[in-house]
Length: 415
Ligand code: ZN
Ligand code: ZN
Image (tube, rainbow, N blue to C red; front, side, top):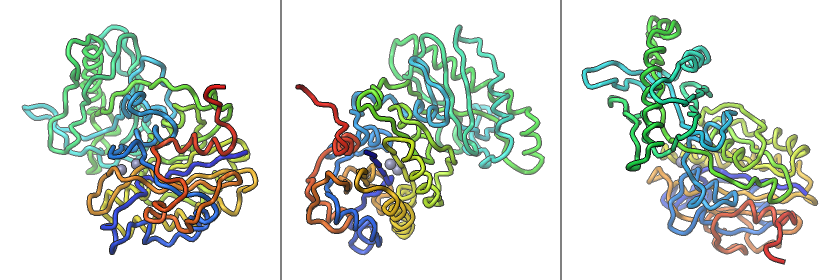
């Protein structure tokens, strides 16, 4: 048996999205409608009713975890998602090059993306990794760039802790932050903050005078002259899905966060295409890679970011177009290629992102399960309103365990 879980980020919507319809209702989705007609449909609260999900916590819940218990932050997943190693006790951060200028108050951020730097980042990465930290004994680090200005930082050593603030003020024109403990009286948090502050200060020193940045400045571009960090997190302790279910899966996602979550749960990463976070995801290529990967792995988790980006931009037309592309490029191809005698598929979103509000909200998202063991219901279309009539009713998260159960992979609880 094979299983496929597809999560379209920010899929859910509200009737205020587009002429009284949600974007999913307004979109023409004949292939998803066909799956709805063949399968069972319902509404899923990504984490629980009334809980407004982040993408990371929603994914943990949908993939079978309790995010209230296991979530430590985003940095560890970002580091794993770009192929870095994280051991227990390591602290991962999202890290990015930025452009700062000295002022009497401190270093002021001019450009949080360092002019969307697209060349020379590996040399700057090497310069940062040559820094020696002295302020705290026995602390080491590794920085790795991913795409453009983005990357991840891992602090390693005994006695580190994730309860520290970041150095990224998250707004241009502001002075960069000094990392400090976010809990009182924790010596490990103190050590971690001191190490991060030393690294930030030294990153400015080595990057300011780097030949790459001299060339950027000469060409009228913003220099990538500091490394800013945020989202401190240690590695959550998971029982791997392979050890629970006895099957091996893979994650197919453009965003590092989603690859990292999959990897933390024991999935293999089968692609590292890019992190552009754009609407231009090559869905036809993803569909082909998925079909090829399904020959090798028992299950696939596929993540598509586009609908959420369009909704954060409050662009209903773009969200509808993205949903229609998912239908015609990804779902159409998968539907024609998988062996439906031996495959179960689930399709859903990780939360609602209404157009008017432009951010995540807590409404449940529609979900389909289809495959030989799924008892079909009367719903023949796939959207929020139709899903409210579906045979699966309304439940919270856990889509992956529900999918695995159809494949007879779920271990028995009790005897
Ligand atoms: Zn999301
Ligand atoms: Zn979002």
